[in-house]
Image (cartoon, rainbow, N blue to C red; front, side, top):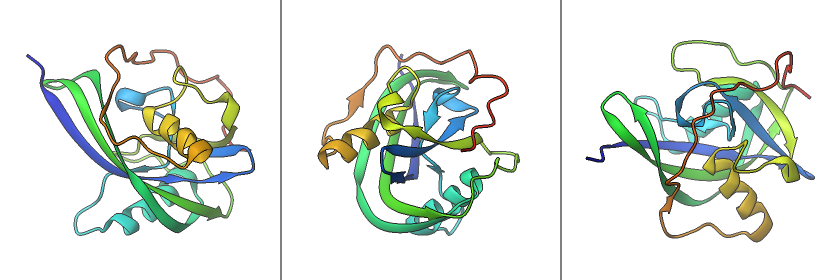
Length: 169
């Protein structure tokens, strides 16, 4: 029997020229992939407050949010606790970022190992989360899908990012 964990979060699409700001995911169904900076809301926190906080925690940079670009959702297999799948709903925002990239402080609940600017042509479903792939699609077409996207053959990556890569550039 399928048992879905429902995840909800807010995420920033921050790009400059042909690069997208991404994090190296350290846990969850997107472990060892690029992901967008963002995540879950804390108690009493609004959507905008959450995305600004998450960008700061995960990248060290200060986000100036420009607009909400839409909501996406997708489902994929993920064995976690008693769950067989995750149904992830994400609100996406465009933002500009200022400051310097820093390796995120590691604390309970922190799932970003580091952040970096990655060339958009180097992002693919084999190295990135569905969030990143939808952000790239939006950057190229200004459109997000209306329907729920299902990744029935999702692979949880066991290998980590390149050793010694500081992820800051």
